[in-house]
Length: 378
Ligand code: SAM
Image (cartoon, rainbow, N blue to C red; front, side):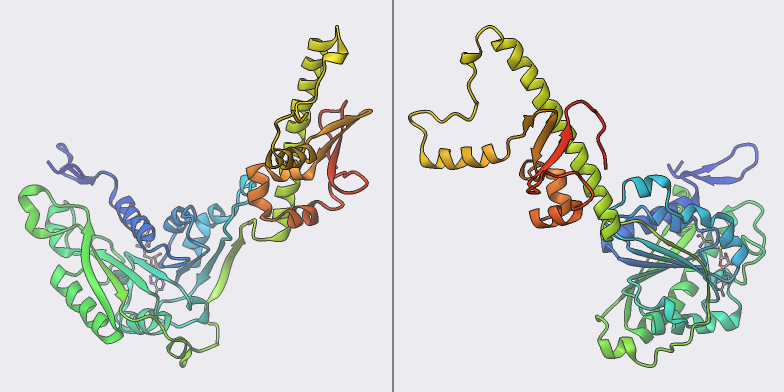
């Protein structure tokens, strides 16, 4: 028995493992891994399950869904909103998710500029007139680099118990591999794409000749789009209605970057402070009998080279110190921590982002914390 295909003994119903819809989504996820698209549109997105899965793909910055049925999109669209954790730890990348109510038979400028367009189990739901317009809208107008179209393979149907005509009452047709491939090859020829055929849902070994349960065409545009072709005759009139928009917090936005940097600076300063206080405590215990024994760890020796000396000066300028009830932690020391360094990029940017938000020494060179309180924050 094929590993992804099981026929239940009692009912004779065929079950795929993982379920067929998940195999389709994983196929798309693998394709995203291969092409690394920034902008992805899912046409006929229904309850937004695929979009939800794609929002976790780190290369994607723009996700759009389109469906002719607004209510089915609205069922689960809240799952596309950012979570509290997204605000607590904003991501490096920006991500905008939008949902649009409209038909793939109509052109709308909001669907321009996408790298990957997915049409999963959509075309068999289209009326004849819509199916006729579909290639011009998707391949002519939207013209993304990659288009994926999946549809049932009717040759597999005899293996599916209970399927008489079509697999779903809303299906307007179901095609054999030959029908799908001739349709797809003609589109590829007209719009300068190459197309490769594959599928998900393997048949059982003894029925290999029927092909995959779901047939898939992957279209790749042959030539990069020129500015002229991208702009030629593209209508500016919007016909879709946007029903959802979520802009995820991102470190690319100054306010989120600033919050993250302030949090990281205070956290780092607290760690340095604690290490210093612990060190001073143990030193105090060690030398409490004879304080003259105490030496700075940065004391240069007789054979210190000039390079070593320069390093010591730099290290010394990064040394935190206690003055009365205050601990001074040089910004240079804080900036040397990889997380702070990575967030800010430059020392100047660090100074700019924390100015007025974190208590600094009078010359602005060090973060000042109180020795007594554990959780100083501005
Ligand atoms: N793509 C989804 C998935 O794989 O989970 C589900 C596809 S569902 C079987 C087909 C979807 O296509 C339905 O949500 C339906 O409303 C939508 N649809 C049908 N005709 C459409 C059209 N002309 N334009 C846009 N969406 C359409």
